Length: 184
Ligand SMILES: *[C@@H]1O[C@H](CO)[C@@H](O)[C@H](O)[C@H]1NC(C)=O
Image (cartoon, rainbow, N blue to C red; front, side, top):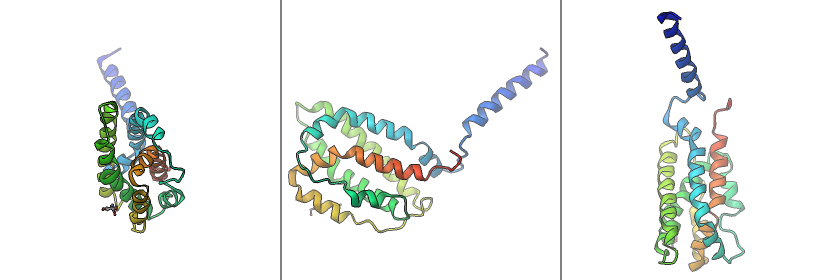
């Protein structure tokens, strides 16, 4: 093999890798955010798996918090990203801080996972906010109804909301999957 043909081989190989890494073709941060969400969803579910049993065991209310109206609000539509933003904000301001504050000596193992979820949700919310135009966001969802239900559940609301965290991740994933590039 001549040095020339070797170089050609290497270049060819590189271009193959280059090609593979460029599929799907994203030319902006919002596209990458959508395409790479499955990685975050996986991390969220890993953290959630470590805490689920505790929160579900302490959730003894039959009524759902993330109910049909929440699911409907997150169904792909111009209003869904506003709803997603509000619900993430609700978890960040109300549910997750209560969960962190509720960690005791016996449940101290939960804390790093709740905090990890907090951090991912925080980044997620920034990305959703930043990508408002990309998602063509329109306002409609009102977090007040959800907050009212939560407040009526009194000290059980946090367990309910934490126990339903997987439902929320499914909704978000469904929404973001609807935004994925079609050829994917
Ligand atoms: C939820 O309701 C509580 C109690 O009424 C209120 O203090 C809080 O600001 C509300 N949060 C949101 C996100 O509306």
